[in-house]
Length: 217
Image (cartoon, rainbow, N blue to C red; front, side, top):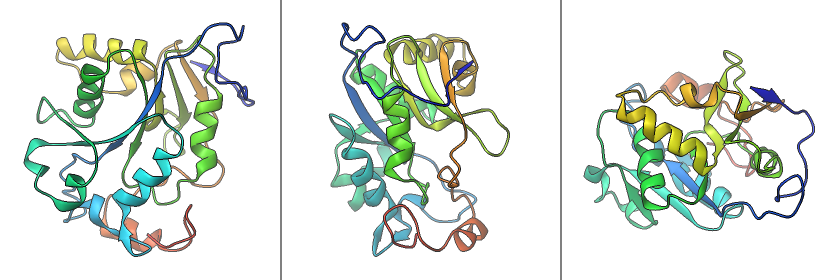
C-alpha cells in the first residue's frame, strides 16, 4: 500500500487532463447493532438521530448521497426519509452495502461512512477527497487500533468495487482484502480521533462530548 502525508489538493488526475469518476456518498446503516442493543443509526446526536447528522455531513462533499439499508429496515421512519440503496445479500456485513451501491451505479466512486463515527469532521472527508489522483483504486486511513486500512471511512473508486465484486463471487466479503493492496493510497491515522466509533453502551458513554458538529453524540 502506498502512503502520502500530503495529499494533493486537486480532484483531477496527476496530469490534470483526465476527469475522475463522479463521487457519491454512502452511509452504512444495515448492521444489526447487536453489541449496542439498539439501533446505532438512531442514537441521539445533538437532538437528532446520528444517521441524519452523518448524512448531512457527507452530503456536503459528494454529488449524491444515499443510505445503505436492509430491506426489512424500509419501514423505519428516519431511513425512509432519505434516499436509500437496499442490500441484495444478507449476512455478509458492510460488503453488502458497497456491492449494492456499485451494482446501482457501476461507474461511480463512493465515499463510504459508517453511521457511528461521532467525532468525524469535514477535514477527515476532505483528506480522502483531495487525495484522489486517478492512480489509486481506493483511498483509506490507517486505523488507530491495528494500523490496517479503515474501510468504513474510505473512498472507493469503481476499480476497487469491481475487485470487491469479483472477491464476493468467490464467497469472500472482507473489505480489507481489497484495501490491503498496492492499489490503495493509505493515509496516516487522523490525529483527532475522528475514526472512533460507537459499538457498545460503554463506547457511547466514553465518547459523549464535543464532536465534529459541536454537539454531543
